[in-house]
Length: 577
Image (cartoon, rainbow, N blue to C red; front, top):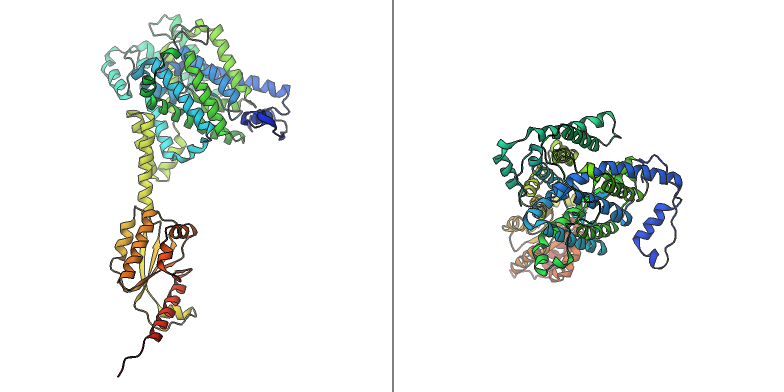
């Protein structure tokens, strides 16, 4: 699967693609992946799949409950994600399933629209994600600024943590559309705290924190849940358990096709967009992380197609929307897996768990799952990037991150991303609007030192140097700097330091040209960048300026003006004495 693999991959070769099958991206991925595949590689994949399955089991149960559904729903989601998304995914290393980030927004959707609404929104999101992949929009992730991604990730961590306070404290407060309402309900019921639940949570957290320090190969979350479950059941503590887990992947409670209506679809467009945005972002980010670890580049569009198809199927089985998971993907890579058989085997392991050890899973305390999620809420934060922002004193990035984080917690993911993007754009406009407009008279002495002899002093010629982009955010600064330039002068605009201009910038230059012409003066443009020149040509500005008014340097413009004025003086008859 990658450079971290304990088994060296066989040499790969590119085979020709012919016919319909060869035109499909997934077929090409399969061919490259399994060329030279051997029993040694199969053994490595099986062991990696077993390891990922052990890590995924407690997370699947926890995220199912955290989504406002059931532990069984999380388990079904992990099974189908491993089988469908693993088989059709855009990379051999990607492991998908229910995630804390997804649970953070699903719990609000479930509280508002119920489980049927959440299922329908998930299916709609699947169609949206498939559309993104089919229309090759897998690169859209690069247009979301890093502070926005870090901010909504931290906001999701807050949602996960606060959403589990009732399970951790042994309270029953129900689900709420917004997490701050859930937090208020928990605070109002603090007098009903059950210390048994707190101890169960502490056992899980303690195990997850300490065990990796001794042996990172042991699935600490699974061990912690096992210990907490044994303690709670042996001592017969009155804590809430997971409850019934059906011995099937077709759950009794699932999306019924006959219940889908146009009104329901219209009502769930916004939640579906939230799910689609989050699933796409998290999966593509996970693909980037996995690609960095393995050196294998993911096919983003194929990954979105697989992700969309999986999320379209899952609601009809009773599961919750899924996305790729960085932690499980990293485990797959570190375990020596090589191909997409790893997520598939992981799905089969979870299927076996549901069928064979369902009675044991039913006795797992909800507080134990809450402990897993509390640790997850801490680990999900991008602490490295946060420290980078602070240590480098990138306060604008910190501001965008904090705004997005708060918006994620108070509103929803889609609104948070939009708010974060708007703040980022406004900050960029503010930074980009810095423009320097400086004026200098013609220096005949300097021109002479350069070997360019002028015929006069030219007091009516002024050079203006513009540095910075010229666009709607700084047009007023540009025009104000030219207000007191006499309209009778020959104005030289040196634009070498202007990388670009927008339509408003074109309009400002044209207004300046017309103003000088009406006053008897002229405008010469110097050092135009290719893109700016093309824009001025298309708009007809250069044509209206007249010939000989665009130059490479200010010296050339001054020389041209000098020659032009000398010719005018020569044609002017001397006055009679």
